[in-house]
Image (tube, rainbow, N blue to C red; front, side, top):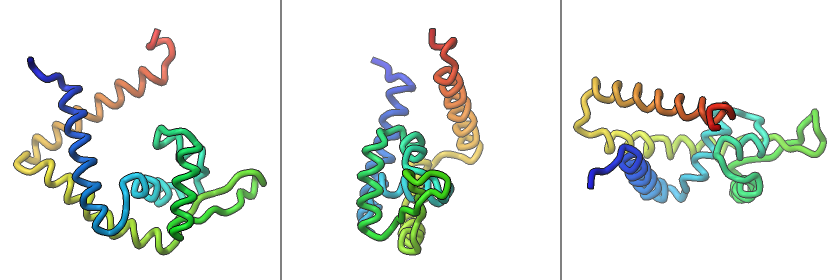
Length: 147
């Protein structure tokens, strides 16, 4: 039986995640922590709901993740000046340091996955994956396209 592109993509994504997890454990980090830290580094002051949307998980899940990150002094919650019920999330210096330690593991994992793939093929792969993401994002965003 021939494998579908979807099956191969899923397997490659799983192997990339597993390989990254093995490397990140060397500094006591997890991939979910890394994902949250990356989001906060790109979006200082973001709220938990927006983080949940970006991670495509439930807000309660992000709340627990933020609790653990805050206990580890990697993230801090600051009051939202526009909404006294809301909190804005910011990385601490310790969180920034951990992110800098983890970044090379992401680069190494990707390089391992792309070993033997020419630069031209890498660019082609990127264009194809970008197109696939755009196609699926457009369809999921357009209710008429789902009907």
